[in-house]
Image 1 (tube, rainbow, N blue to C red):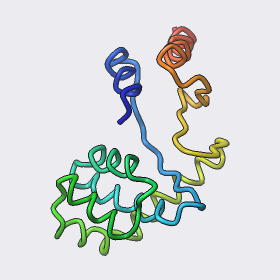
Image 2: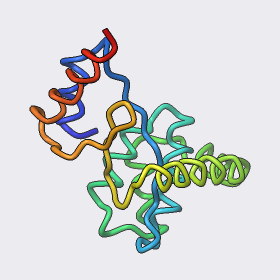
Image 3: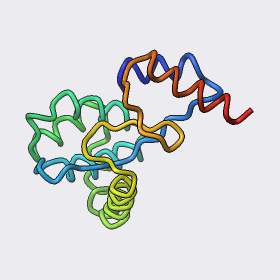
Image 4: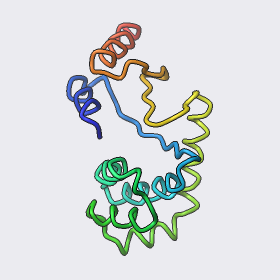
Length: 140
């Protein structure tokens, strides 16, 4: 998770909920496999550990590198392999659903951040805070 997202969650613990959606870009050969692997990591409670390693290594991804990152994230590799095999349809359906939702909402690249359904254009702490405060004030 980025430091910016961590700051926002710290400052708005009761008002902000972080929801991650998959949007594997077609021009990145290993984005799809990485998304599926992140769901296997999530099933072991290690989504963010794996996510952060994948984003830090996005330009080096390969099947072997994804597996190496899963191991580095502390996953039980026997379970990881089994889940990727046994749950591939479930995982694929989730990723496809997220991708279609992103397309409907105008996502063009990653990461994209939305606040209550509105795309955050100013990706800074002040920009985030302004949009959150607007959303909170509208709900009162």
